[in-house]
Length: 182
Length: 182
Image 1 (cartoon, each protein chain N blue to C red):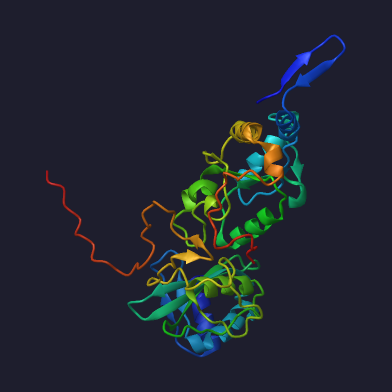
Image 2 (cartoon, rainbow over the protein chains, first blue to last red):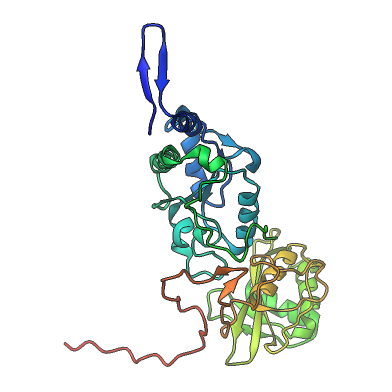
């Protein structure tokens, strides 16, 4: 349940269950990893730029996976890069989310008949949001990030933090487990 | 200097008769494989040729002839002329002297040729795969290459998708083009 925000004469206040209040705080500091593999990274930079300005939703880039909440798969992923991306993903702290940005990260896109390109980011990391486009406009990516916010709103965060909540994220690489690829 | 004259000069210095072809876009000379490094050195050092820039070095698979061709595109900044040199190596055990001592840029080009065609270049200081992971099986640009089912748990075909015709690309009998009836 979402908290109710009221504006009183002495100042604003929010009323709601503690889960909702925590999620309200959580979803407004959605930090993404400054990481791109190809041309979609340019649009990723634009999303942080002044026109789309993802910062107004609390989304800023972090340069280390340890501080990031969202991994944006921005661009074509080669097999050589896939193992590195998996390593970055494994270094991120829970809760973590993944956005597959653009056709290449969704299905391999234009390069899907290449010998070197992975046919979709979801084959090696669990993906939450898919954004179509080649490349998607910054508005699309911003919408994708806001879909992550909506997903955060629905999560029973405290239960999850105490380990009673089973994640709905399926790990598509069960044989890999949490072992980083190298 | 005209390509014909370059070829003549090269043949003079090498002391062999070179096969010269002019019909194609870039006129080229065919060099015997055992004189390859020597020919490259002459092409670079001879003041009248002075082909000091290696534009590209790549392979061509010719299973019908049982050879892999190595093609080097050269350019001279001094004389503003270009030249192409071919050589051939046995397809069963492709092996050719490295020219990385002549043009250091050849290190990467030979790595790529090794990666995609499996040609061994003795003398190259760093002959590793460059585009594909080190533990990849096979050399994708060979005509009889068959892609592995999965790489480290990542399927090479997207589940639910039809496999792209990437495997055997040996010559198939093409249907004769139909003449339009008028």
